[in-house]
Image (cartoon, rainbow, N blue to C red):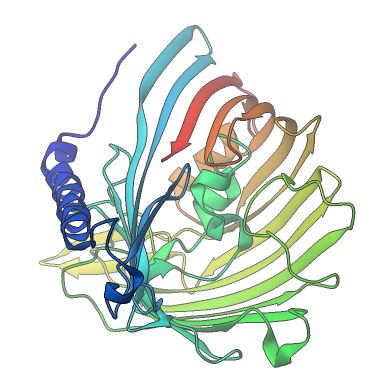
Amino acid sequence: MSSHVSPRTSRAFTLFVALWLGFGAVAGAQEAAAPPASAPASQAPANPPPTVTAEPGKGIVVKTADGKYSFGVRARIQLRETYVHFGDSDTSEINVRTLRLSVAGNILSPDIRYTIQLAFGGNDFDTGSSSPIFDAYVDYTRFRDLNIRVGQFFVPFDRARTIREFALQFADRQIAVRELNLDRDVGVMLSSTNLFGLNELLGYNFFLGGGDGRNRFAAYAAGPLTSLRLTLRPFGTFDEDQEGDLSRADKPRLALGVAGAYNYRTSRSQSTIGTAFTAGTVNYTHLAADLVFKYRGFSLLAEGLWRKASQDVLEKETNGTVTREPTRSGHGYFVQAGYLLNSQLEVTARWDKLFSRGATDPQLVQLVQTQGKQLGSGLNLYLNGHAFKVQADYFYIFGSTDGDPRHQARLQLDATF
């Protein structure tokens, strides 16, 4: 059994402390500037002091009286114990799976919002990068049909990946999603959740980005990633960006989504994630379709994903030596359901399957053959909704060939402050 936090956490944690100290200075200045309680109303300042609110799961927010400026900070931790039985071996690991710090608010106007999310967990750092930046973007939301976002954030592709990690029904995402998603990238997004003002019946997201993923600080071949996602909500808007039906509303809610993306000349083996190629670049085509349904505590989430590379192998000759690097083409799907027995206790189940396509990366083929099928169930105790919960799940993991299956059990505390 091991317990660890990434060595880089100690360096990045300095920023965490600095932000909290800075907030303390703001709060202290506010207190010093406030008028005495006995001062008559006629002597009240022309500009009322900012308000400070604190709420479990939403952090601390400082906001000016006119609403033109706000600053909020919150932290999140995820503690996990994982037990795996495979063949004749048993392994156990306990660690700080996730440690996050989020800062968000608005500036100059309620329509101009900013979000920064930093990640300090040992598994949060991207391949070849020590940067803790997860999200860093600015939104402009004045126009109903044309919201604008600029920065680094989730590519608006499949629903299961864009659901925030704190709002999951299981301890981790589906294997098909982990392999085939588009994760984060740097770019610009145009979107609307209420296109044409039809009671939020229609929504869209159009993204144009660099295509090489998050925190890429080296020069690479120019080639954009474009993505378009369309969403239909026949019964109106709801919390489709969170798994489970914690509201247990009496009316049915449904969201149907389809998306397509094209990543031109990417240097990453999995389009926007994975190891970097040295033998050249490849073009990836992506398709996705998803469904979210909720009714009286019952929730259903289903999704299909497809990814195809423009060529199966990249080749490069250097001084008579040929380098060959396989690309990764595949598809997959999952079906996931949950039911709240009461306001706090939920039972869940999931079936997940991944496929490889053609002469693709042997590592992907091996993953499919040994772990491509996963059947699991779980139990969630919501102490403060998704903001403070205890999760337990079990998965039977096997593949398309004969071999020993894996038995995986996890216990997790997920808390947002």
